[in-house]
Picture (tube, helix red, strand yellow):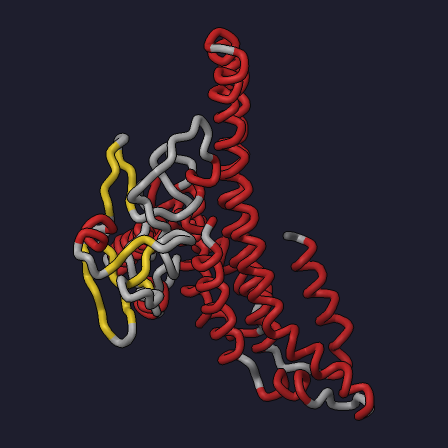
Length: 353
């Protein structure tokens, strides 16, 4: 088991943690009460809720070349420097919109938590392997055995399978880190107090953007020739193929971001909606029928929780798999006679998703 898994992880944290998952956090000062607020459960907020208590988060604004720091939204409004806008959110008192919102949000907190847990588990495992536990002897304990199972799976069945030759070694650490981080972020939504950061398009776009950057940096000269020049292809055909290939460079990370975002958002909405039918039936038909039907809705929600747990890991696997496929396609030394086999390999990998 390699012990250098922490080496690229600091870059992983730096790129992730400096990006706020929501450019403008919704204003939560005045709330409307509703028996069932589905979107309120999945949208980002300027607070986290623990044991029924809301803890409001700091607001950090950059407007017209100046930074503004407040302990929460209420203090920003009370300062007189910011007011509520007519379309929601807040703006500076002189009407100037917020240039960049660096505010801490609920999604960002759970995003950081997912990255922190990934770092912590990887660091603890690396310490054990450096001491010889797992490298010179058998792995000890449930956590280390689980770590090795997932690491070997990502290394042998994803990285080694789709990244050519010995090049896969330098991508294993990134692929394993992103697999573990996404798994944690997906699973957070299963907790009553938890939030799913990957149900935020900004988070999934950031993850896909990192894969995009690694893919382009990994591209060989032969890869770029096949994007712009298409050796052996008639010049008139290049007029059609080259724009398609250039667009394809961006549609791949776009598909990564949308796939993960849509699956996690829809799962959260489904669970909240079905469980919320208890309150809908109570409002429509009275407490007797509402409480009586709750047994069915709770059982159905429990089954969906099991399914969502499986989907959470599945989506992490799919994101990691497709990332490896895209990196492998760019890092591969292409040959004209290998075009057909390359397309077949890509189709087989995509079919597994």
